[in-house]
Structures are given as C-alpha cells and as structure tokens.
Image (cartoon, rainbow, N blue to C red):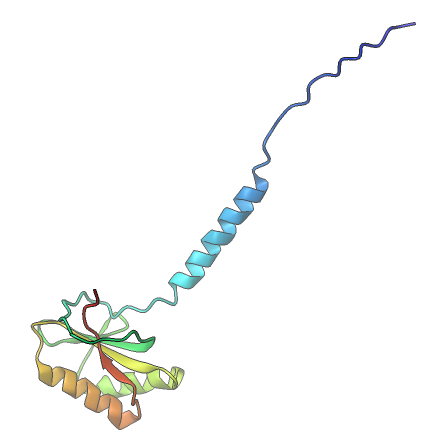
Length: 133
C-alpha cells in the first residue's frame, strides 16, 4: 500500500476583481447620468460680488456676456426670440425659476430686459447670480 502524505498542495491564492469592476462600472454610469443634469449657460461670466445671497435650484439659466449678448442652453438668443425661448423652457418645468448670470461689464438694462420678459410669460422666481465665498 501506498502511504499518503499528510501534506496538501497549496491552493492558488488569487484575488477576484469582478466585484470591483462591477462597482467601477456602476459608478461610471452614475456619473454619466448625473452629468447630463448639470445646466450651463454656454459662456463664462465674470460675476459681481454681493453682500447677501442664497442658493437656488435653477430651471433656466440665462447669461449675459460683456458684449450684452444673451445665452441660454449654450445658444445665443436674440432679443426678439427671448420670450419664445423662455416660454418653451418654462413649459418644460413650470415649477422652476430663472437665474440670470450677468457679466460685470454688461448693462443693467439687459438684466431688466430678461427679467421683464420672464415676468410677462409668468416666471415669478427670478434671481441674479453673484459670487459666493
């Protein structure tokens, strides 16, 4: 008879990376989906400072650059078409408000023009974006 040895062969020690890859892919999908909800006006605006401010959740963001050009959803909007664009976006989300991002070099009249157009179509929650510290 053969004598069996009491020693067992060592098993291969390997780390299973499948669960970690699953988590990474789930996080990737989450970040891709949430990135589509971030709204930007399409231009970079140098905001002004304010003594008081409060955070708001915007539905519509309108930006005015230093040349007094209006941008909404990364597209330049003419003064004549502003009401139609605001009305379309407001109908998509009637509970949301309007945030106006104005450049330091823009005219105050443009802020008033956008606010007046928004009030005429029924948007009452209007704010002007400022620097936060």
